[in-house]
Length: 194
Image (cartoon, rainbow, N blue to C red; front, side, top):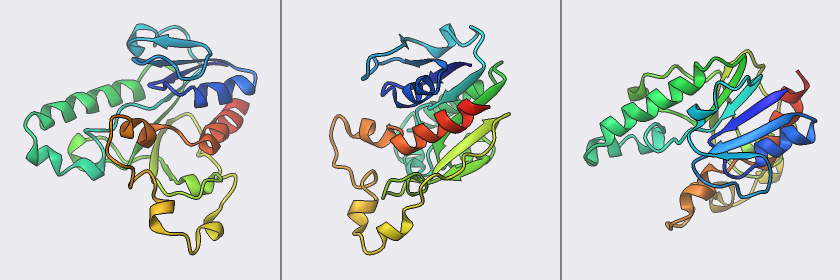
């Protein structure tokens, strides 16, 4: 398949599809962190190039449930939220046969339907929690590959919720937005076998 991985700078999902024999390319405004096929620029410049499948990771800053309070406390956030919701919706409704759009749990103000599936890193071999929604078009739910909840028993919350306790800093957003390798592999293996 010809696979577009939108809004991905890490190359993890792109490379998971490449390992499964697909022609995959990542796209982001940032350069890729891993050498490989990557378009640096606006995804809508290349979205109509005959893709069979797209996995998109649009920015969640203005859509996520955890940030809803800032809509009321920071000027301009409502307009930024509307723009983010429009971008998300345009990705989800793109003219591509199979689509998955990934984002954290959203607040209702964005007007986006509920996710088709929610997943956790601990379902895919990572001893961490980060509830993530998948909005799917012509794709099955991801099947968990390695449930490690038992290994998490007795672990401190700071160790299982690392992404939530990340220290403030210029790269905090990168740490919080990078796809876990186990989830990327499941996408490449399961959706790549369709």
